Amino acid sequence: MEHLKLFSTRINIPRMIRFCEEMAAWKELSFLYIAYDEFDNAAGVMMMHPDAWEHVSFKDVCVKVANVEVYYKALTFYLQDHPTQLNDLLAVLTPRIDHTRVVDLMRKAGHLPLVKPYLVAVQNANLTAVNDAINQLSIDEEDFQALRQSIDMFDNFDQMSLALRCEKHELMEFRRIASYIYQKNLRWKQSVELAKKDGLFKDAMEAAAHSGDRAIAESLLKFFVEEENKECFAACLYTCYDLLRPDVVFEIAWMHGLMNYATPYVIQFMRDYTGKVDSLVADKKERNEEKVTAHKEAQEQQMNQNMYAQLLPAALPAPGMESGRHPGMQQQQSPQHMGSQQGGGPYPLLTNPLTLKPFQPLNPSNPSTLKPFDPSTLQPFNPSTLKPYNPVSLQSCNPSNPSPYISNSSTQGPKLQTLNLNPES
Image 1 (tube, rainbow, N blue to C red):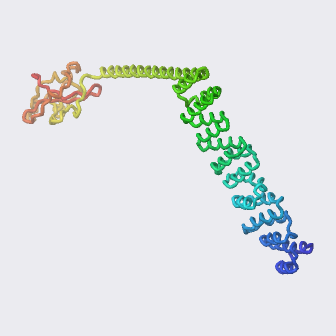
Image 2: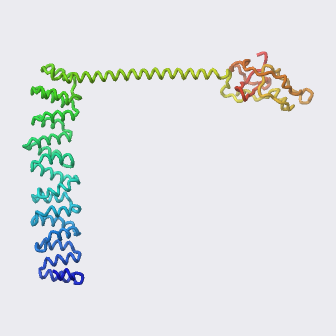
């Protein structure tokens, strides 16, 4: 062996392996397999020949094997020959093995308690097989605290099966755990009945309160009345306060002479309902004040709009009118505008239509009829002389008898509407 360790890099390892097999030198053979990187064969030699086995070297070899089945053969080997060091091997192989398969292997062998440290170490994976195995071990060991902790931290297990096993257990704490499991699965009625059977009235009242079922709470209240348990009757009124109907409570207390025990419930009930009525009255008053405030704001806004409307001019442009012309009228030019185009004189932007003379046709052949424009003859414009616009008074324009119309715009005042300049109208 010393020669192999010194000259392992210079010897012909395959040839030495054949010689060691012929000479039954199993320890040297396992060393040669490890030196030749054949870890599967090395593990097999160690398991087949105990004189070649060493715990430390075997752990190192198992980590490097390529075949997964070697892991489970090694577990069986340790379970049979070295059970005390099985958990040490499992700790090394934890990242590489299937925990469910290990649990099944140990359960079939009947040595599940032997690997409990390993199961506790891998329970963080929250596997069903591991959780069921730990819960079963806790029941067998009658460790109700460990069972309750496992149930609270890891919920991936067969809960109904565990509840049935705990319900039939002879210890009350395990039956209490069964009631707790029923609560977690929303089986409130079974939980309350189991708690009443064991005399765990506090657990029964808490389960009824958490259920949110009025029928369960009232049934529990009647149970305390039938059992003449007055203290639990008063405690149930406090615990299940939100579920119990006041008329039912008053009727039961009056018929069985328990009004003294129901008085705290009555006082609390009257206080709560008085507070609710006061909050409703205050809410209604606040809404009425908001309505009054909104109505006043609307009135003020309407008044402001009316004041703004009074500041606008009396005559406004009619819809559909363009530049003071009616849609049915033909475009005509005023005499002053025609004169300004022919004579070239200035034309004011705004004139008083009432001061204009009737339209006189011009004779282009006689230039003497044209007179220069005199601005001094114009009078200032008085908006008060205008009448409100009446669309009914407009008539369609007759081309054979044109009436003089004028349409002017002012840059400083409102747009004038088309007006009839006939003084007789």
